[in-house]
Image 1 (tube, each protein chain N blue to C red):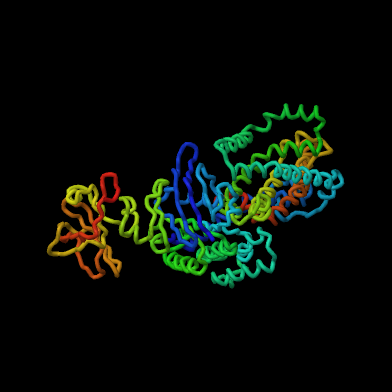
Image 2: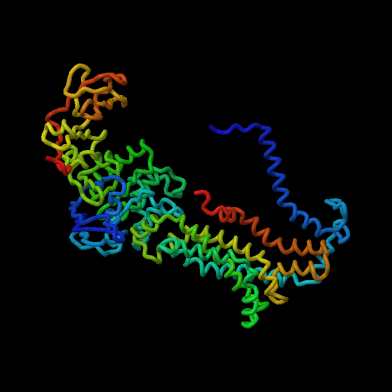
Length: 332
Length: 276
């Protein structure tokens, strides 16, 4: 079991409020991602769940028990840190065995659990090495191994992939998702990378300035962002947010349209513009167009679309996929 | 782009490097050589480099005239004792400042260091009087106390820098893994801090070993360490270069040998967080 409930949880440092009151329900076995720009309080929130930061108010309930003032170890959670936080003076084996040793388990039981974890994570050949002799990806796996052996109620990941290079990050993303399917344990994952959030999460919690902007499945957030912030944060390249006459036509203060929902043509369309920078990714092409009266629009089109800098083009947004927001930024 | 290094350039800098190294080492070498000369040869002009009558007479003479063993013992007791006492006081202090700093931590560190800015001679008279009244003059206990106080700021600073390098996340990981404070200290903190504590200890033993101002001014015969032993061969009896050199060689030999074997630790101590 591993359900976690946050009830009016808040945090302030001195007089500065970092997290106003937050309510959140995390169900057993869910993969929940906290995402938001840096400084939005997502890591602080995770550390509060872990017990590494005290609450300024509210309660944290884990499996029906109020754990708000319990010590970190008593909460039955495991954490994987951004810097891996491995013990540099211990071998991989000792690192993974450490939580079991602290728990006072028998040597033979520890040995079995460590070897099982090492097997799952492909670390069997590295058990005698020190963390310093491992690559970034291997270190991250050791950190995950150390978290697994405790058989926690939930795993907490604090930006675990941000120290890895792009290729490895993609691999580890799959490995962690795989692990979630194998273990079926609740996972809370903090990241500022919306691609990680979209690809891994069952449920995404978008945070901004300590507040929850929206909670939902990746596709819910993509299709029905509740406000301008979520609209701009989820999706890559980001949604075009248009103000002024074009938005007023739809009785909105801001009009949002995703780059993939704009048609580009060399002959006709709703908005006329000139091509600026074109980014060819092979599979896709991102074209940045300066339009007359509407502003800068990013368009996503197929990989073979050929344009030249300064060329005149016409854009047409898909009318069924427009997002409308009122003056306060809320979706209409 | 890597900077192109021509062979000639390399040669010039190699020669320059060795020359500077030799220049720095020369006084020690000269002292060592002089200790094997007769008094006459020691003051000869032009100076004789290697071609002189090598003799061990100075060492015999120094041995018979003073009790080298006693001075060595004093040096060991004073330097090791003051360093250990310093560590006992400094470890909790540095620990607290590194892991639970307050707004005033930086000020306290600066204030500690500022005590090193006053010249020692400024407190000589009051300290001398206190030592006299408390019966600490010419005692090992007194010297251990004074050297501990002198070196404490440096010990605290060094340890603070080392402890600062231990990432807080590792301690948090230990807490998540269920380690109590005691277990956290025994299994995680101490093993990680040992290299830092060791190099701090080595450097301070050397500093205390070579400290001459207080050891010369506060001792006479009983507690006199090797610095006083060397000094006794200079002024009072006129300048006997060869014997003075023999005494110096004998005085610096133990610490030089210790320094040689602990080079790696020491260099790390001296570059203090310069390289991450």
